[in-house]
Image 1 (tube, one colour):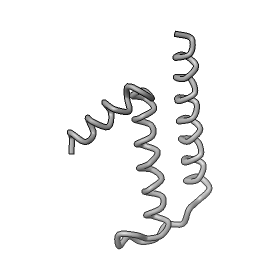
Image 2: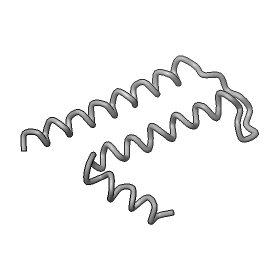
Image 3: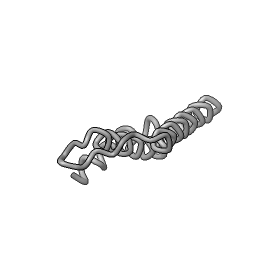
Image 4: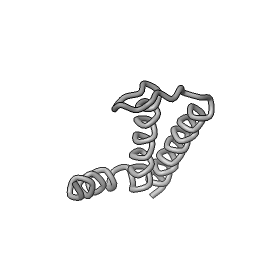
Length: 78
């Protein structure tokens, strides 16, 4: 498993940056956990999607966008 993670960061980290790759993984994990909770998958009790959970997803998506955008601007200047 660690080789897969290392390969992922090695391949993507060079192109999009380690910060973007890390935040993208966290965003994916958060999104899946919200879906699992909302639909009650994996034998869990269903927890409805609340405005605060949706706001957390939106905020993390916005952060991912800004981190990715700032990296592209710096690369153009170099």
